[in-house]
Image: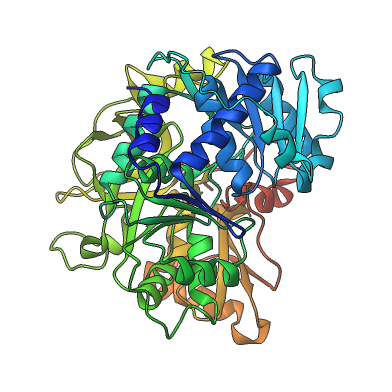
Amino acid sequence: MDVTGLMRQAAMLNAEHPAVITEECRLTFAQAWARGVRLANALRALGVRPGDRVAGLEDNNLGCVDMVLGCAIAGAVRVPLYPRNARESHAHMVSRTDARVLLVDEAYADSVRDLDRDLDCLGHIVVRDVDYEDWLAEQDDTDPLLPIDPDSWYIIRHSGGTTGKPKGVAYTHHDWVLNCRNWSYSTERMHRGSVVGHAGPISHASGYLFLPGWLAGAANLVFGAFEPGKVLAMMAEHQVSHIFASPSLLAALARHPQASGRDWPALRTIMVGGAPITDATALLGRKVFGDTLFQGFGQTEAVPITAMGPEDWFGTIEGSTPLRSAGRVLPYAQVEIRDEDGRVLPIGETGEIVAKVEGQMRGYWGDEELTRTRLVDGWVQTKDIGRLDHNGFLYVLDRVEDMIVSGGFNIWPAELETVIADHPAVLEVAVFGIPDQRWGETPMAVVSVADPAAVTAEEIVELCRDRLGSYKKPGRVEITTDALPKSVVGKLLRKQLREPHWAGHESRVFGA
């Protein structure tokens, strides 16, 4: 099956029902589809043919919805860019995918100005300024009804770029349908009365819920640029039933004064993913929003591979600690834990997580060599370290490259971060290895707080010693009121914090 055909059918069968809600307007399926048709024809007039790439740089707004629909109708391959990226990253993504057209919100136009002069592939930049609506209304409103091969490319999504340049992961129409279906399997059922809120970027993980919502006849609500107070107000006004939130977004919403002390009768699912979540954030989210929290785990290359709802996440299950897990292995995924030589390890042992899932990537765009190293015999090598238990829960300990080896012991930063984040004064924390003459390296914790007098470095050290043991306690703690650096998709940039401490060292030191 192809995305375009399924979306066209849903638009026809739900024509007069709400499809899109923004800060300014509400559109039916018929109205939203008509806008997508006009954009598709505009792209075709600019020379875009099926299989050509079209890039978009935007917030979650009506133009973003136009882009999702228009590219699908035109048979173009959508290439989402990230607003928080620098011009260099935009240029890399556009040039690597040979995108022919770039649509950009006026707010971000300066970051890509004249990019069409710098890149041979890019023929047109369309800025969504005050003239955009008039321009769109002038386009042909006849659906081109182009035939779409389910195995043709649908979207190229890039990794967050926490290490090296972002890598493009391509999905076909068929694979995107399977991928999004598996995400919807992991939530409460969507239906015509549901309202799917998009607080996180549709260009990233929240986009996995857009297609399921559309196909179910639900309304997709776009909040614009993320502001916690605005999101909460619109959630209440429009009776949002489903929403995706990264841990950082969930924390921002749950801590906001407008969130607590009120009921959320329509809310059925907050799908949490995209980065590790601490116990403190999960418990606070549950306290504020009730038993609506679901968790999904995977990577752009293979997702989702695990999931769990509130009955598992906050339940008591003999032999498991669900609160510390990333959920249970999904029925449509296979997961193995392997050692450095690729041997499959028994249940309970720690090694690299490898996965195989319906709708996973078929390769990195334009990089066959990297594809061969990460996609082996149909299995995606995640570069995450973890273990499985007998109940099917997967525990993700950390990234391979972030492991700290101190005095011969393996220490996973995320384990310390979870414990430190439980301190009531801590807003966020990053742990990484720094050189140590005695142990080779030792954990360092950078802790962000609102009030630096509310916690001491000694308290943080003792908290880790009591919970994890002496050998895992941080050798150094830095307390700051600054926000910690994050990637464009909200993941902590440990490397950025770590590297200055290794300046002057020819190589990383592992072990004493």
